[in-house]
Image (cartoon, rainbow, N blue to C red; front, side, top):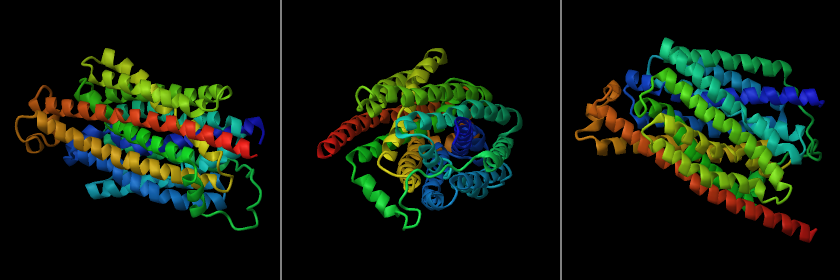
Amino acid sequence: MTRNQRAVALLLLASLNAFGFMDRVVVSLVTQQLKAEFLFTDTDIGLLVGTGFAVVNAIAAIPIAWLAERFKRAHVAAAFLMIGSLFTALAGMTASVIQLLICRLGMATGSAATEAPPHSIISDIYPPERRASAISIFMLGVPVAAIFGSFAGGAIAQSYGWRNTFLFFGLFGAAISLLCFAFLKEPERRTAGHETGPRPGTLHVISVMLGSRAIVFIMLGACFISFASFGVNTFLPALLVRAFGLDTAQAGLVFGLISGIASMVGTLAGGYASEYLARRDPRWLLGFPALGSFIGAPLFIIGASCGSLMVGGPLMLVGCFAFYMAMGPCIATLHGSLDSYTRATGSALFLLVMHLVGQGLGPPLIGKLSDVFAGMLYSGHFAADCAGAAAQVPHSACAAASASGLRDAVMVSASFHFAAGAMLFLAARAAYAAARSARTQG
C-alpha cells in the first residue's frame, strides 16, 4: 500500500469504528426520554445499554472473526456495519419494549465487526513499532463520534424526539458502510505459512493468549477499564441532567466535550507517548497508561462530587484523559504475540471478554446501585413513588434522591480504574520479563 492508500484506509476504518461506537452509546443520549415513555428504571437502562447488547455482541464477534480470517476483512466489517445501521434506524420506529430490545440486539450484531477485523487490517498495514500509534488513530473514531454524536444526538432528541435520533444515526452509519465497500482496500496479509495449510483455530489462539502472563494481566486491566468506562459513559448524560440541571441538548453537548476531548487526547497520548517512552524502556508501553489510571480516577471522582459544573466539568475532563490511554498499547502488545491469520480472532476474544465484563456488567450494576442509593436517600418507597417522569420533576424529593443516587453510583464506577492501573502495571512487568527471557534463550 502507498502512503495515501494507508491514510485513506485508516480514515475509513476510524469512521467505521465511530459508528460502531455510536451503536453502543446512542441509548445513553436519550435515557431520560426512554424512562419517561417506557417507565424504565436505571437498572432497566443498564440492561438495555449493557448486558443485552454485550452478550450478543460478544457471541457474534467470534464467527465474524472466523469470517475475517478467511474472507476480505474490509467487506466483512462494512457488511456488518450496514446490518447494525439498519437496526439502529428501525429502533426509531419501535412501538414496544420488545421491539426496541430486538433492534438493540441487531445493533449489537453489526457493531461486533467494527473492531476486531479493522485491528487485523491495521496490523498488516503498519509494522510492529508503529502499531500502537496507528491503532490509537483508528480509535480516534470514538472521540469524534462522542463529540459529533453527542452534540447532534442531544440536539435532535431535544428538538425532534428520541425516535429521530435513532433514524439519523442509522442512515448515517449506512452511508459510511457504502463508502467502505467502495474505497476500503484489503491489504496483503503479512504472515506466510497458512495460505495452503489449515488455519489456526480459536482454541490455538486461546492457548497462546492464556500462555502469556502479560496478556492475561492486559485482559484483566481492560476488563476493569471497560467496566468503569461503560458504567460512567452510560449514565454521565443522565447525571448532567439530574445533578447539574442541564436539558437533553446541553447534556449531550457537555458529555460530548468531556468524553470526546478526553478520549481524543488520551487515545493519542496513550499511543504516541507510550511508544516514545518505550524506546527508552519497553515497560513504559503499558506502564504509562497504568500511571494515567492511578491519576485520572481520583480527579474524575472529585469532579463528579462537585456541586458546580464549572468546577466539576474540567476535573472530570482531565480525569477522563487517562481512561482512554490503554487500548492502543494493549492491542499492540497482544498483536505482537499473534500473526496475520490469528489477530482478528485474538482481538475478537480480547474484546469478547472485555465487553462481556465491561458493557455486560458495568451499566446494569451501576444502574442497580443508582436505584439502591436513591431508595436509601428517599424517605418513602422510591420505586413506586418516583417511576418514570415522576423522578424528573424539578426540585422534588424524587428528583433529589435520583440525582444523588446516580452521582454516588457513577463515582463507584470510576473507582474501578484503580484496579485497572494495577493490572496494567503487572502486565508491563510480565511483558518485560518475557522479552528478557526470550533474548537470553535466543
